[in-house]
Image: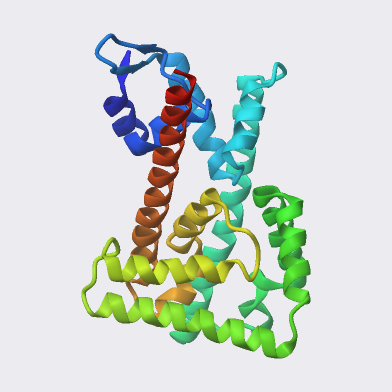
Length: 268
């Protein structure tokens, strides 16, 4: 048996997150002691592994619960599917790394590289692949709504939205250079504006917000763009967004617990 703290350390997720999973019925502790301590067995560990795998490919928590609770769920089949999806992601990232390496060598004068190859990872075919990947990660409804929403804006609207986004990231760079911590009130206030800005494109769930924070510091395209603004910006963004989403999740848990307590009191 593992305590909630041991499981938190093992899976590298917060205790708060495990409590939240319990609240929404996604991952219940195997046993709760008389002292209120939560304990998890090996079966719970395997279920948590599946939850983290599905989060990695972008499923929302409600979708993950439906998948895992389905009577047709097969752990071995799921693991094989995860491996295939992760291998595809590795292959895509390796292609981008190779292109970046070739570009560095080209700029250093070590090799000659055609202009076409400079944009090889971002060809029309590659853009379609990214769109397919986004549909798998966020669901077709989210992607379609985002495309529809963006196409509804006028040229002036798009310019205004772009300027607003640039201002948000510019303010984050200023905060970084001023030595503000990602968890500071100043940075978190800027991230409130960042969150609001995302609504121009789609309705961002907490899972999407967390995924963006991780992607900003892991995806080569994001890293390259943000490092143009400041070399440390990708890590700074991930740390700040992680804190921001943790606070939102904690507030949601507190709200749910308060509602439950109120209902219990009303029942009495």
